Amino acid sequence: MATTPSNTIAEQLDLNHLKGSTLFIGLTGGIGSGKTTVSDLLGKLGAGIVDTDLIAHQITAANGEAIPAIERQFGQSFIDPMGALDRTKMRALVFTNPAAKKTLETITHPLIRQETIKQAQAWMTKGALYIVFVVPLLIESGSWRDLLDLLVVVDCPEDAQIARVVQRSNLSPEEVKRIILSQASREERLAYADVVIENQVELSVLNTEVMQLHQKILQIKKDRSSSS
Ligand code: ATP
Image (cartoon, rainbow, N blue to C red):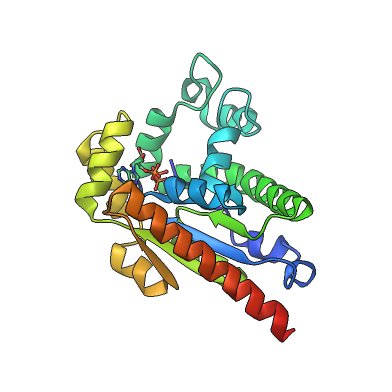
């Protein structure tokens, strides 16, 4: 279940301190478009990856930081026997109940924000070449764009998104379609993209695209440092 870290991530990351020392890359795309595949490849090339969807999953896994508050607000029936969020049940609720969605976000967003900032700072300390923020709902959240040096959209046709997600999850094609409809449209995402990674391709071609993106980012970094 993709959740959007709140706007104040941008405000709380200390831009003055960070700008110049590294580049911030936003990576987004619809469900199953290939964000993780692309960010894994960039990570191998030396990028520091901060995956907000992964953070959202971690805080709602068994013993996750968000679990006590979720149990208090929604009741024990939303927690599975292992102590994790019952995602299927929560997904069904928030799709039809905006107030419940808001309550869930009030619990999860501050925790996601806190962890996002922590991980970004850790990558900077480690000297990552640049930082990639994987944010599924980046376009929808708005304020991320001002923070970023480059916005990368991973794009593929809906048919491919549906086939990939159905194959790797227990979601039905109808459920995936509903999620796609609840997200920004392909056109909206592409309108904001500085770079589009076309991912209706063989993995070897995707690799080449990602390598070109990496080179482009390094060039921007070089240009920035020589002009400052
Ligand atoms: P989500 O939004 O659900 O987190 P995602 O955008 O991170 O998904 P991935 O997890 O990277 O997408 O990819 C979805 C599935 O499609 C994965 O099983 C991945 O291995 C597969 N996949 C991604 N790109 C390709 C490709 N070019 N060719 C074949 N399979 C691919």
